[in-house]
Length: 140
Image (cartoon, rainbow, N blue to C red):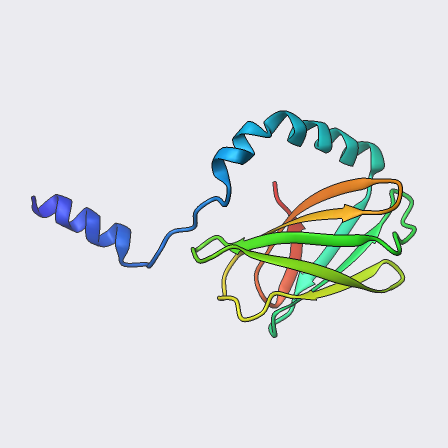
């Protein structure tokens, strides 16, 4: 009984755990997710960015040759891996393939951000991870 009590205490003392938003629907959509991954590879777009300390996300999007992807529409969702609610975001173009948006008052720690990038001709997706004040890196 004491061991069970210790386990419950350890599991709950750090606060709520992260949960995968729309987990069941994401599992059902696995085939379309894999098809989109193939499209992403064919396009070869590169998404680089960072999260700032004040809650902004700054991105650049370029093609496989390094040319900026301008006039794209970028929307997404994110969540802190340590727990908390998922949030939606929309990024506005800043010029030369740059985009910026606000995460708002989000907790510190590692965040996962899932983006959809649309142009008139193409649709790509990217999943990035990073902490406020650091670069965003593609999820492994």
